[in-house]
Image (tube, rainbow over all chains, first blue to last red):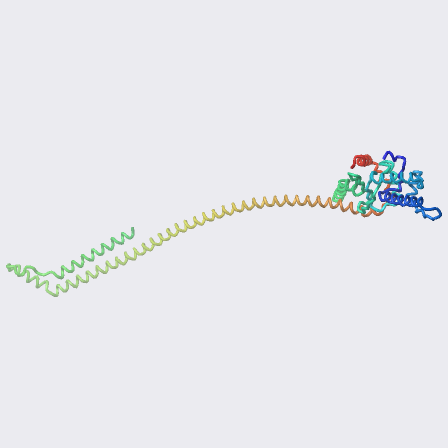
Length: 167
Length: 206
């Protein structure tokens, strides 16, 4: 992805679903513009409404979608991101808010990979924290796993408490 | 030995009886053999003898002999009766003694047999009791061991379940109370701790 290093993936574009949505939106825009070029003058043409994600990525990368080269560049970039970008699956105890995802994606893009994508899952039984599943590994960063790791400490406390009560 | 004495006494009485019978027969059945003696003195003597020992005298002698014989027979019968009574008494005593001795011997043997059987039964019962005690001890040890093992397993399961119950309770109690936004710092700390591993897996992953 070195060739596309100039383009930046906004933090709002978090999942492959978002990338796919951008691709479909870009394809619609491109189709409209092609049709507009083929039309005769005097006829009205309605431009498709761009989404917030599209506006964000266009503005962050200073692109002009009216230019075919920029559209092509963005399409190639999105295709490259969809096929090559690393994807992390993260499960939480509850549905994450948009603000939470923005902060999380900002950290991931800064520390893991600038093009990393995240798919979000829901596991209510983990209590707090998250479970991260990368390509080959799984990182259980939940409170449940933390409790399991500290089970001996809990049992020592329980047994110690029983011994004190018995004494 | 008393039986032989009894036989000898009976034989002696029999002999005496036969002797009296023979004497009586000879006395009563005797006849003058010298009737035809030519000697007149002898005839005179015979006549005197016949005159003295006439029929009455002879009858008197017979009667006396009969009475004497009956007397002797009576005395001997009395003696015999006394001997018989004595012999019977001795025989009874002997039989009683012998039977008592025999019975005592048999009873002693029987008692000894009973004692031997009793001793054998006691030894057998003692051996059986020893074996039963040993088996009971082994069974008790085995049951005790299994109880201890089961107790340890139950205790271990209880501790594990207790830990799971506590964990589940804590997770259920606070899981929904902590907002994800509040967890962000905790999550980012954990991600920071595992950042290198995640990067390596991403870079080297398929």
